[in-house]
View 1 (cartoon, rainbow, N blue to C red):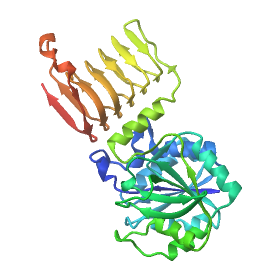
View 2 (tube, rainbow, N blue to C red; view 1 turned 90 degrees about the vertical axis):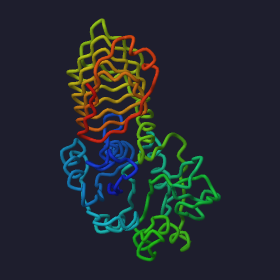
View 3 (spheres, rainbow, N blue to C red; view 1 turned 120 degrees about the horizontal axis):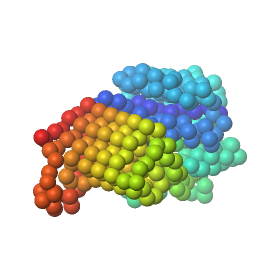
View 4 (tube, rainbow, N blue to C red; view 1 turned 120 degrees about the vertical axis):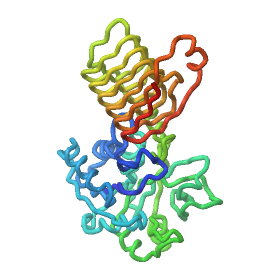
Length: 366
């Protein structure tokens, strides 16, 4: 068993966060989405070789991050560059020489899924030996996704982003394939989007009377393609953390709930309501943090109140009178205001503000 992870795509819905990096490297719960995927593959499948399909723009950065990560000690990585976004099936076809007629797992690089689901799906694929196993998730509005029509444990038809879907079962972006998928891709034509659709390739297998099964995801699943979904994934992952405090806390710090505080963190006169992660080297002064906040390395926060947010490395937040909520801030961001007196703060503290700010941005009012 091998794996293919598709780690290209422009991530336009995540701009400006993706103006300087690819969406698969954006951290959720202080860890890139791509790393969360590799954690799952390691824990729940026998995969040792992973082929990463990357874009020309950020492919070298993805390669550098993976080669320098702990995952390089466990996985053998092959990297394939897709020079144009010609569809998921086209990306899969580029990996055919690396798969060597082995069955493989295909995983979109911007998907988060709860532990245990991938293991169960893999067990079904091994036991029943279908040509393809498609992981599906029930959602309220599947029009933005491919959908599946099913019956008696089999997939009858896949449709890419229908305006009038006949089911609410969206394609999760996770598939198990046998080598026959490459023959199927070779026999389909580009869609109206001028892309080779993986849905059309799986449909070809169905039309050839090849068995295509589905696995229904019962727990949480998120497509990390928008800031809103990044924050939902962050919440889901933070709900699974355990307490771990590796820095000394003094009596001025009030802590409630599940907290991870790494080495070298300084917290003064603040309240932390978990679940929260604060990475190494950060400083928090006179703040109310949480719940559901992930704070990166070497972040500085003073006189702020923040909840349900992701703050990346080396960011500074100082004297923000409204509460920060539902926000994602990039690396090396600075948001700073002049300090207000208590009378000026009355009422303003009740307001909530949402930020989505890209790397290396400064917003100051002094």
